[in-house]
Length: 93
Image (cartoon, rainbow, N blue to C red; front, side, top):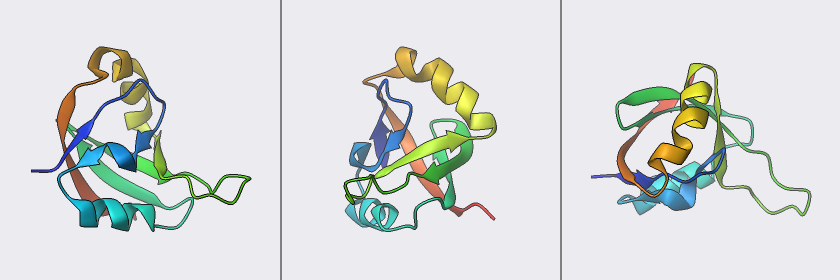
């Protein structure tokens, strides 16, 4: 089972995905700005790969966009530290 640990952060960080190292490696390699669908617990939504930093180091995180953004922001403090089921549903087309 693949899970992720929720944090109080505004982003979904690949380092918080546990149980599938190949999935984590694949997500680190997707292009900056590309959008992908994830299921986190009972919620599904679109997240956008963050841009490489000014220091040229990749940013291994995704920002919530659209409808999932409000839920992500509201729930981050209530669920911080909890481990929830996680699934990659594919690119958002």
